[in-house]
Image (tube, rainbow, N blue to C red):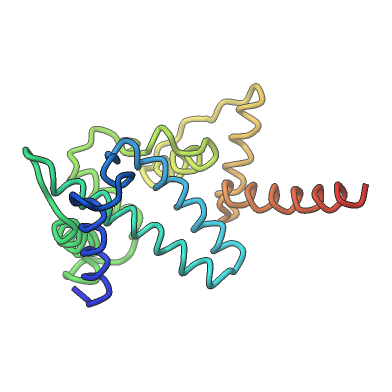
Length: 202
């Protein structure tokens, strides 16, 4: 563990321990979950804006969520784990899911291989298991489309109603190699910027 990371863990421990921060002491995994989502969006925003200083800060804020949740997990009396356990599990998973790098596997179709490994690891019944229900609708539709294509499943998409038209746009974006969620977010941001400018000039 680097000195900087070790210091971060120590600071988090001090904040959470008796005599630390009252707000930090009150938090649970459940109360912290919305912050992790918010920080992930702020990180994406910094990336899309090309904001290097913002990127560095938002990566730190996201790392705080990991360290905070891991510190809370240490206190669980039934199934405790800490940030070292998180890092150990992640390292093992990265090695296991990249046999084309760490073993003698073919790198021909990495996405199919990745899906197969995850399905075996998690004993999933469907290739669609594990797609978060709370994921944004555009991002979720794109995930479903990707899993379907890689699995060779061919079922016609719905063709009636607004939802069907939106889904068609998601599929069009995917075929073009674009992230529908990101494209809409960037376009909406540009439109908002223009609206703000016109608001100021009104």
